[in-house]
Image (cartoon, rainbow, N blue to C red):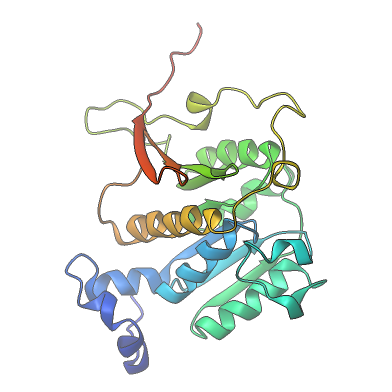
Length: 253
């Protein structure tokens, strides 16, 4: 592994003193390549904390530009960024947070024509998308190229989070569940309101996006218990966190 410089040792000192992370864990973070799909509500805090944690390479996928209505929750962007591509705005923020991080900006909408090649070039995938088409594409592709996927979704005051590794098995030899085991099919178009239609409290994606970053750090460092086969449900109005277990569905013969 690439050794840490004296400045990096000072920057990451609070990680390095952790028994679970230490120098080897920080070196793993430095060597890691993480792809964040969506530089919006969920992606913003995930990108910020992954950059601050010292993830060596961050890939950012987004084809949108920053609008004024984004700023209430997409905290990686600021007023001066309105009208700029989100990947450019986020890359500039990463450079301010941690100049040791390399950003690979992909300013396009992810589609099936390039998803597999793109995802295969990274170690962990973060789903910060805001539509079901991209979520299912990411889940299916990440499973096919055998990459962990940390996926989250938000409502108005609630959200959910899970980690998907369906290409592996649990301690008892049972295949880990995939996204379609949890959500077999996308809801019909128009049945789930967008955040523009229903609204969303600004701090909510900060909570879920930060938890996504935490899952990525655990996966890269090989520590703790990722949310594989477990769905974390967050209700911020009641400030209640619940975890629901789910399994692989039986497939029809």
